[in-house]
Length: 73
Length: 332
Picture 1 (cartoon, one colour):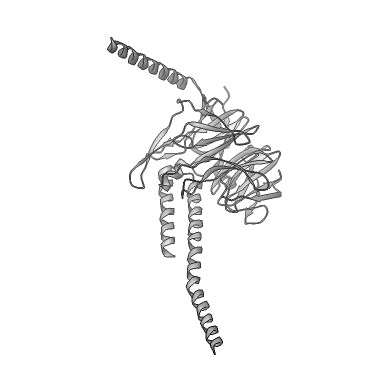
Picture 2 (picture 1 turned 180 degrees about the horizontal axis):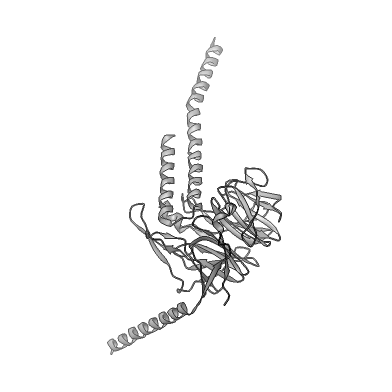
């Protein structure tokens, strides 16, 4: 009987651990995606090779998108 | 008595300064102005010469190579600016690119900075894939000093002050040396501009780094990354100031160089120019600087251009509409 209770408790523990850590792991990946997209956004802005005021606006938009992406995760 | 000495001392400084400014002004006005003619006036009719995002030009092996980061390809043109063929395509496999950023040549081999694949690809002169190696960054510009020393620059993300601008790799992708700390103030947009830089391959293992703003000394390195005396650019070649509008308090940038090419022991600096709406954009004036930083002559182009490349008697350029232009020097 004790063994059965220990087994059930162990299963419960593992399940709750899995439920707790799964979203945390996902949240770890999401900022990476955000930073990856941010890097691409910056390079696209710079590749346009346009006047600097415009580039500054585009880079700021990239930063705002990064913030929005991180907040959403 | 002391007052008289102080007065004489101050007067000598003022006279000395004015003499040096006069000399510099004399130098500024003494250099030769060279005009060019459009060798391909019908450029707007040529669809293949209209590019999506041309980020690098290189004249080599009797042709012109244009890297288009958006189309993920390298387009090949004749010296007359006629389209020949395309090298590579979008992808992650051998000979495929993801946002290529730059190209350089060594012993008839092409070295492509394959930015989002984080690798350097080496192709033969026909564009066939030879090999590649991974790098731990998004390569932005590339200078091949020799087959064992491939220098790559990156654009720092601005997340901390530890990022370096220049990395030298061997063909296995191992870092041989790094140089130039990135500028870091915490204002990412401003820092991005301050970290804008151009690598020029000086040949014989010489590497030059030109900052696009706020710095008029060209950094000089040998093939092993040893710092050589920097080259102070003559004040005849001037800064163009602009204040960045975003990020709270306005910050001033001193625009210095939009693009630069090192060709036959001289620097060709494409100067930035003010636009109609007081922005700072690409210019139409190319200043030729000697290896000691003296401005020797100026080439006047008919339109503002973003990128330049040189080959013998002509200048290749990308104009503001991303058209490939070909200019020839006017002979008297």
